[in-house]
Image (cartoon, rainbow, N blue to C red):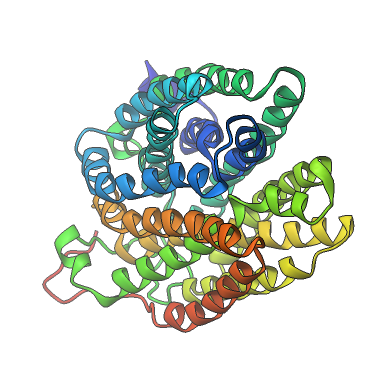
Length: 423
């Protein structure tokens, strides 16, 4: 039925895949660090937990994700993204609902940790792999639109959580978010997702006359690389890219998880803190589209170096924020940079290594992201608990961002040997 529908619609079915995958990326924000940041203050105040302990649940999920990612990547290639995402939506709804009753640390860690594992593995890998398989020529813009869906969730989930917390408390907020997960995403991912255009008798969006391109600025088409996991894992590029991405996600988690509490500490109030989070999320979406557009025109590594530079600049601004407008400007710049770390790596892996084993390749690289997020969330919380301020954390992270630029510039497109197949 879906195959027949795909052939009859007057547009490429990949856009339907993008809609369904975007739904999955939207609802994964039930376990996002920005969503958790809205809960940090009320949970800490109500239950007497330290901010480090609350952030530790995200870190636990990150550590488990590092072990789970290779399995999820392999399953995505072997059994299909639809199965992975359908199970993930069901499980995320359960874990989010469970947080309403998680009033002791062990239950909170189990419930939110499970959500973070899903957030960092199956949602991240499954959705981006689906887009990488269905899009080649327009991969940059499609990936940008995918993460725009994520950023819409980044805006709405914390905003809605804040409203429910204000009216009915933080426990009711978790239940509302859990219901949204199922209502918004379960039907689209279970019905519409398909593994690849070839599986449906279609072709990816590759013009017949498009020549291969080794510049790294866009996907090769008729000469698209077709790396196996084993061949890709023996290149320097994949590990440099994975390491740089892990570091930048360390910066992201070290900032996003504590952003709301930081602005409250600066005397700007809960409303400004919530608004700054919304600006962060909105500009993450804008940044996703900008970076996606640039990736089809500029070499990947240069785009990524610009992302790292922008992250470092934003982090340097955080310690000097004292007014509402400074907070919103800094949150906006930071959001554009975060859009880059979401979009650029997903496109880079597919452009450099092709679609053949993209699930497995993403599976062995995502642990760097998970570990980075785990370390970042706890690092900033620990600095606050030791010094009473986030200033030292932000300055340290800014320096680390600058250092990452050199690492990124070394991630040149790998070259297939004569014996390796090209599709």
